[in-house]
Amino acid sequence: MSDVCIDTDVASLLQKGTAPQWIVPELIGQRVWTSFVTVGELWKWAEVRNWGSSAQARLERWLRRVGVLPYDDDVAKTWGRLAAHAQQRGRSRPQNDTWIAACCVRYDVALLTLNTKDFDDFATHDGLVLVRPPR
Image (cartoon, rainbow, N blue to C red; front, side, top):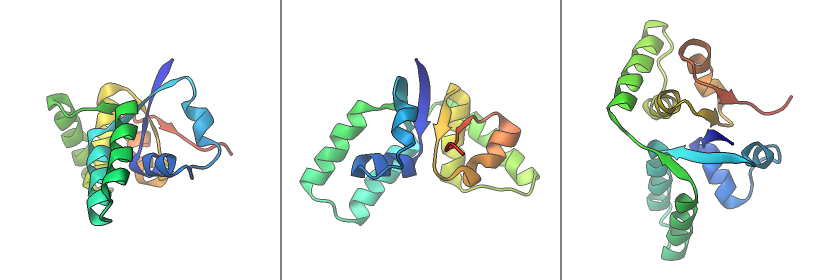
């Protein structure tokens, strides 16, 4: 069994039951994680969209079924390194994407995202492993 972290886009689609067909087989037999950043983004969406108590309860139940890659000092140091290197390459990335990449690099967990272009630079230069759709 290995580990895979799901990005916010994948987490959202899995909850709705609308994830592309190739995703679920990628998760079978894996320990599934998400990052602390994704947890925050999902709760932000719940607030912005005024989810009722039943939808919020579904989100809570779903979050209890996945592990959460937490913040720690090593994640912060990794974020600093990734953000600095991206800036030096002229490829600054959005902060939340950089935090998610930092979690995956720090904990040595592959990232499953539909937004691979947002993370390709980290994969090319910083050791982030991306799970990509089949071609």
